[in-house]
Image (tube, rainbow, N blue to C red; front, side):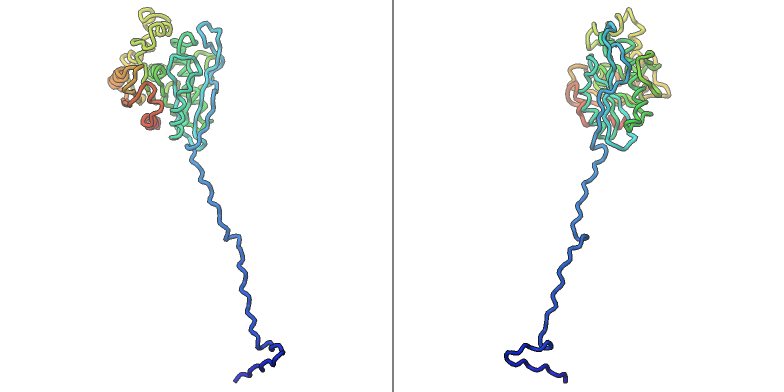
Amino acid sequence: PPALAPAATPGQAPSPAAVSTPTPAPRPTRLASARPTPTPAPTPPPTAVLRTSMNLPYTPTIACGATGSVRCQLDMDIVRPSGGGPWPVFLLLQGGPSDVNQDDYMLPLADALAHQGAVVVVADWRQAADTGGGFPKSFRDVGCAVGVTRAIAARYGGDGTSVTLVGHSLGGWAGAVVTLAPTAFTPAAGTCDATTGSLRPDAFVDLDGAVDEPTAMEDGSPYVTAFFGGTAAQQPAAYAAGDPFSILAAHPASGGRVPILVVHATADATVPLATSQSFHGALLNAGYPNRLLLISGGHTAAISSSTVTVAIMELGN
């Protein structure tokens, strides 16, 4: 049997063999890998964050008054996603008649479209004879805006090969004329920055447009007479060239038919609903694929309507 350690006598320390010394437990080691890893903040999609460039001139200095003594440059505001692309491109025209640089009310629609994934340009145009416009200069401004938009779209992440023109109220009239005209409204030399491609859009959206302005004269006979430089009897060719209904009757759609969306608010007290209903019918008779979308609200309801935003995006895509 194993030998036993001798017992300690009183006053004598026990022998080492008789003492059991506990082994200390190891202290826990804090490893770097055990530290909690912070959760990275999610990266927002590019359409959630918008970039805006304001007051970008798209013309040289041109006449902005009846006599030519008032000079200005027409501007563009551009709203687009923070990255990605190439995005579809939309060009917005304000209503009026008003002075230049009065198009800020269109920016909510521009923001809504950009959040859906688009590059949106809001362009000034000279809307009246006393602001340097009138026939044909007002329509040439729109043609210039289309061509410049195509030329610069790629700088802002847009696809300039397809531009959808969106006109509200009086802008709907100008947009309809430029879209439907048998030949493009080409700006006079020295009145437009460099353009690319066609000066007419690839699709068109009419928002409560005063498309019968030459005949119904929603903005008054003095405005229309000054715009065309005389009455219909005095300037028949100009009136015919500036009247979407006359253009449709004389020039039905051919192989290059442009898709069109016609939007009207049922409580619009500025431009009658019947105007858009008649335009829709005339487009169908002329062979243009188009849709009439009715919404609730007044004359500017389309600017903030999510239903309209979705319909515009569907057309532009």
